[in-house]
Amino acid sequence: MKETIENALNTLAQVLPDKDVIGDPFWTLMQVDEKTKNNTGNYCIIEDCLPLFPSKKLADAFCKQQNGYAVFGISQSHLISLLSLAEEGLLPHRFGIIQPSKQESPTLDYNMKMFNVDYHNIREIYVR
Image (tube, rainbow, N blue to C red; front, side, top):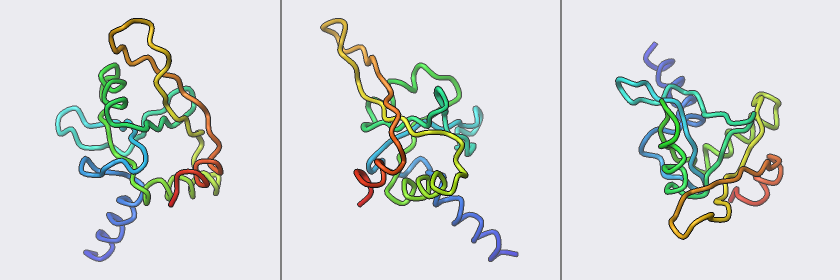
């Protein structure tokens, strides 16, 4: 029984980042339990896309506009797992890379745009 639990936790750790994972190359938002602030396993989905932020600062700015979410790093191993799910048709959402858009004022306002990117391109460009 103990071995089964350890195997299940290891499998989940490949797909679900925890708060200690550093984004390499991306950051994303995941739903958190309001009381414990633990990751619930649900990725934030926007316009049928899983948003990928190139910087934690950009993800943090966007996260302030969302309720019930926190920023988590996507490591290389997490990215490979997500891409594998997409390749197998098990990820029902597209990937969206978030980029800052043109600033409307001299103060930093964190306007953002999301660009849909095919998982093949993400694998080719971002996976080492």
